[in-house]
Image (cartoon, rainbow, N blue to C red):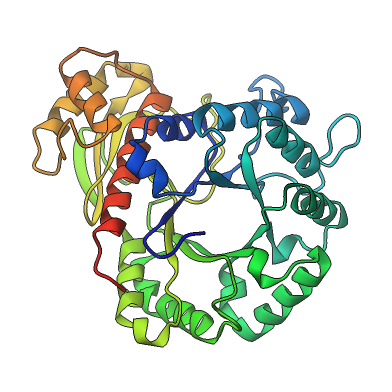
Amino acid sequence: MFNYRHYVPILKGKDGEFRSLSVLAPTARRSITPFIDIPRRDLDINTDQPKDQIDVYLEKKAKRIHKYWGTAQKIFIDAYDLDLDLKTPDGTHFVKFLFSRLRNYNIQAIPVIGLDRSEHADYLDAVRTAISTDKRGVCIRLLYEDIEVPSDTYSDVEGLLRMLGLSKTNVHLLMDFRSIYQKDLHQLTEMATAFLSNLPRVKDWVTITLSSSGFPENLGSVLPRSIEALPRTELDLRDNLILRKRNITRFPTFSDYGICHPDLLDFDPRVHTPSAAIRYTTERGWLIIKAGSIKKHTLVQFRALSEVLRGRPEYYGDTYSWGDKYISDCADCSVGNGNLTTWRQVGTNHHITLVCNQIANSPSI
């Protein structure tokens, strides 16, 4: 389906990230297979209960995926952040319901499961139903603890495949380190190399992807009215693996979490007031340009932030991506200030465009 010249962005299924996909250039769209983590439902701040019933919520997500990604290309869909035992009001397991909605929209969705979820009978049955109905196989998401002990994981994966009634030729493997730090790079490189170099029948899997992210949990360490550069540690991990490429029979596809941390953080507007900030991906890092509180200084701050970014050498120019054009237009006051969703769309669209170009122009492995 794809190789190491492809890109798998893991997106949190929020509106800004969905919209970023719809405004990608055709070359970038063809170079990616998005991996959507369906996020937990937002809570009503007055009742602390979910705003939508689970069936209404999932119907909205399926509709957005159809609107912003369409039906021409495949897409991975995971429910990593949801309670595994959730059911709709009529008693249908939520994964079974979600894939029935995706199917109604003709979305080429591939279900995802992890070894940590294989013991939940209803979840397993729902994934099995999606596999047998849609015939697009499955993605197995392996976490740090799975990659840490390869021999046990190889055996566990074989067991899961027997339960799903699949062979390796119908399976995508995603090795997901999630959040990583510079100090752990050597250990992570050793783990990934050992896992990949000993993976049984490595050429049989449909795809093999390695994901991680160096993006911080929050931007609290970046002072208001300041500019800070943060390292893209996941690129360092990929570079380390390239140095070991002779030991890796099949080099993995690159994956990251875009411009956000892998963990979905609960945000209560009664307690936390967000600041205006632009997250801008560069060749080796992220440029964070931060202003003050939105509640106190309003969204108009994004105009000044855009002007600052446009004047910096890191800016790629207004023809680079839809996101870059929006930054320039915002600085010129020819579009609105946008809101937090808009700026997640801007940053994610630029990020995906840049990573696609990096992967396409990287040396042959």
